[in-house]
Image (tube, rainbow, N blue to C red; front, side, top):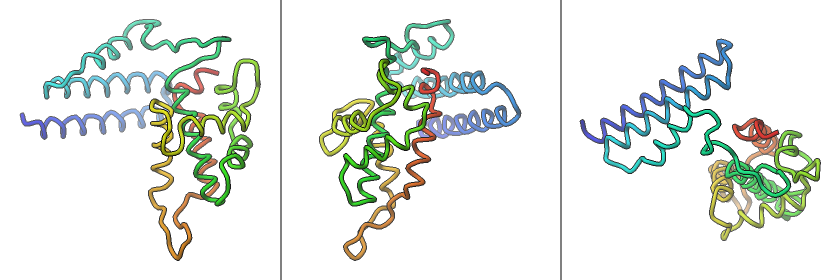
Length: 209
């Protein structure tokens, strides 16, 4: 079978898995169990495809095996000083929030510090609880601005935070353009609020609360 045919088969398998997952959750089945089973099936499809095209997939196979082991260290988030959970998932979330800061500042044609303050006021309670230091109950605008400084701009630090930043920035700016010297096609504030709300329900965030 050609590599193109193998890729096509994998894409069809992943689409079927997502369809089955959506139907199961809609039918009232336990979402956590369904998500876990769907993740295992999807990862199995990807690993099988990579094996078929002679790509290195050992790391993904180890991850797949970890799903079948109770309390696997590979799936356990490391603890930081003070007991606060730390992980690439958290850094990715912070990077996405930093992108919202940039988008808000772009909409207002204002500064990022003011945008960080706005974002802090719109941050869902779940995100405040999941991302704030253990000694604090809320994420401050100063902390949010520090995330922008770390992962935003042209020279943001590489890693999960930067990846999250680029993901949201790319989606937010895909329709942006300049017409008559003015920026058009920027996301509305309500869209940015929805991004934050969706982020609060993302896997790895709710579980850490």
